Image (cartoon, rainbow, N blue to C red; front, side, top):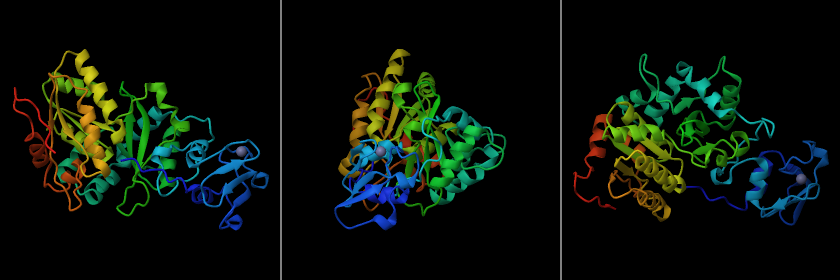
Length: 370
Ligand SMILES: [Zn+2]
């Protein structure tokens, strides 16, 4: 689920990033002479010409003319509104317009898994509660490298782009990194996640668009995993798991790494699931393959958004594709997903058996359950 952007948070966010002076705060009316999110004052606090409504509803800069609500403010800051959390992100230190070579940054982390493997393993084991064999599948063991869609904060001699990326992870206090790829498998963005159980604010922060470039540049599709790998799995008549969100993807990817399922694909949010379903369906059709897809939605979201999005994703698949719904254990609040299911089993083997038990026998019409 995307967190709704609360429109009354401009003042809080502007205070947090130093665009409003705490001394200027007042309970009503306009807070005048503050700094503009667009940076039109060149970073000089004395030049502030931006007024903020004290109730946090809007802002208006009298220098550059920019005005609007919180979403406008976030966009001017280069932050993506749909990722915005209760806690505003720390101010970016990289100059606007200075793009990050995300693929190079990611490659720099993947070249040194020894620097972060233990930290990611500890997160998977202690924070997520995943079983040992699943964790080993995820972060690798001995000479076997980790699943290359995960990384962690690292220090030491790292290439420039990688330093920029890990510095951002450090400042935001989110040390687990997940790669988002385009339809061709190139890493285009990175999700930053809390590495401790105590993390506050939104669980995931994406890299802002000014750093990665707009997703339209790579066709608009961002996903966890590789479409090619899913097509290859279908060619081998293996099951492809379709999930939502980073942790669910990592669990599914670990199952694939362990050879328990064919491949895993994840949408970064429920809103992007239908697009991912359509992309996979298109690839399968192009390859002349039917495919067998295990659908594992988030259950118990507000308004069942996760289930609805997965239903929409499923409609993309043609009649030859066998799609089956995987039930996951629900907690006391009626919520459940693959990542939490993984925390309730003693091994990846058990989890894979649970997932594959839902397979539709060949020739039987798939049906939705719940
Ligand atoms: Zn301005």
